[in-house]
Length: 361
Image 1 (cartoon, rainbow, N blue to C red):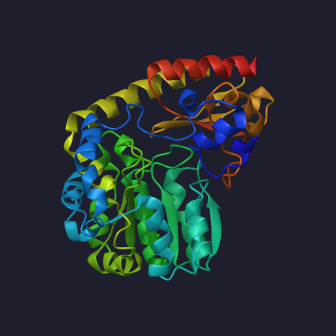
Image 2: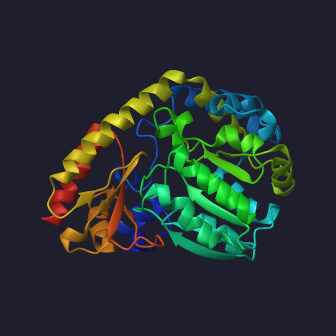
Image 3: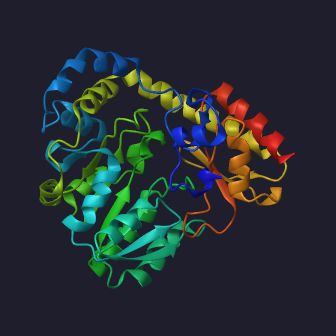
């Protein structure tokens, strides 16, 4: 039952060893990555630029910052690239001297761990499932004395998406309390009309607001690690002082450049995820004992309380059949027994449904 104790999904090599399977035969629904994989140009770029690994990476990351700033609708000086979003999450508490943080839960565990690793303390506020209009009011009662508040939008693992009318009052409440707002938009590319929900542009001009971004999910390159922080120039400078100048390696940089140039792959990705999420949601509803929850991201949180199985047990039974699911037992504030399932392609989704129904029955 090793996967039930894993902090995150996506550990296919560990699962292969535990379940006696070939890693290539595993279908990974535990990590929420683009079901189409990287654009074809990403592979070509890596092959063509492989010779560069004999040299140090470009600390300025070539043309990647310009391409990404155009994609996000921000200025170059408001952008800092990192070795995945996780590197920047761990730099933030030290750079901004965050000693006490409010984390809106349930959510990604690394926000709390990053604060604690820097010697800070964490307070949780469970908000998912409550009225978004009350978010600022609930948070305001807990922000006093907090240096920062962390939230994920769309949220991991629930897939809940907060719109700007819900976010703006939270920003004002945090400003009144003297708290920095850190919003992680790692899954925002999967939201149609993302600009209607994103705080990226506002983060460039509003003090006390930092937006985080990940290229690993939407562009299908988690093994290469690419992320970014967007904020005012002063905050970006403070983050940059603590970051390894070569943390973005050469192959990640050229892969990111190629990915951002392929607009058709982006369109195909969004269309596929929307279609397959709808299909997977409706099919899961027909399986007795489980209840998928609506999601704005490329994954579904699934309530399995009706099956009588513990999440760890269900995850193990599926894993032995070559299907990895995310056990959500370790998400603080998630009281109901749940698993999280990534949205993959139609054939893989159908295999998941067959295995899941077989295990439950």
